[in-house]
Length: 531
Image (cartoon, rainbow, N blue to C red; front, side, top):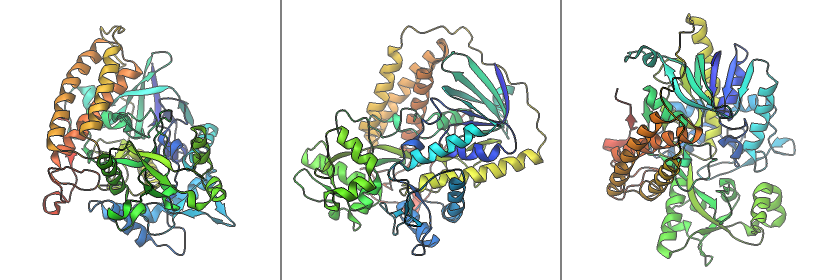
């Protein structure tokens, strides 16, 4: 089954939908999403979106905060561009119907770790849900946008792939996509293809990401020949609710931003000995501090205490977090919240330029799937939604101009060929490898790493990759098999980049190289598939 479209968007969070809503004025847009359209990382973002909107704040201050958090390897030109274009994308979001929380006539601004000023716009403590609600509503109304729910992209189609030879200037032509409900593989021929597929938290055993975060875009782009960068920088959110029945519920950075204090079980605050900003230190430092406290004292978690702010303030400022914790039997107005770190945000990804284009022509990447240079070695809180919205606008403008300047005819893209593949009766292979990858990534490639741990992880992933490749080509593709193949690829990329970086910078902490090496490593890691 073949579909033709001007713009193919893979993913339905703030990155994909912001692009789709702008591109739809210039052609037909197909939005492919793995589950229902609202199931994205954006929908789960609690804290907010950072931008300069107060007389007490400046672009220079936001830039400096980002550079400090990024541990010396942010691309400063990118940082400044994103920060300075922030106010306009906020206006775009408001025009699309996003309703940020106000205090009187002005927007209520909060503060999060690493920020020197209050600059976080939020919608109570469900900012992402409000953004997603507005963008989904706008997309569903647009006559030029067609939404394909419960569809998962299998692989990108490129000229090199069609012509079966390596081309110096490869071009993306679309993608093969599995309709999960019918089992039919659709072939989408597209003039422009956008990866907005989100992150890869499910590569780890413990994550606060939704189940869809299996690194699909990074894996597909790598297989297609795009450059991948800085995969060693996986951010672990310091404060995920620790409860046997809680499925990775995130306690927003904004809770510490509004005065919550991290404490041990006995009530002792500990962040002062790790950083001068104490509980408002950047996330990498806070996550390592918690990890060290847990290992030092043999505890399963630490605690977040905001009781001193009073019940009225807590319930009005954090209504969703308060209610969810209450459902688990924890009253954050009278009790400390048990928390642990969990895999949260991938700071590396598919390398793109200022316009979000990859080194494969007509293939763009926006949001967590992309490496722009903004985050460096550690993402500053609430910069991710900002980055996605800014790059959506830049990608849209560049793509539209490309289509005006270049003559484009849809090539003959081959339909998906299942060959002699059969239905599998051994799905235990998928579940076993899935569990094994996530467990050794947590144990060997987590918050604290070593050369030995990384070598063990690489040996395991290479064996598993062989098993997956044999299994993949022998059996008819399923959503589970596609995701397993992708998390295995992403895991290998994370390990490979971590092995390259012989220092401890930002989110990559290796006990064999405890210091920062600016002489040799004030730069990015890059990896590209060898054909």
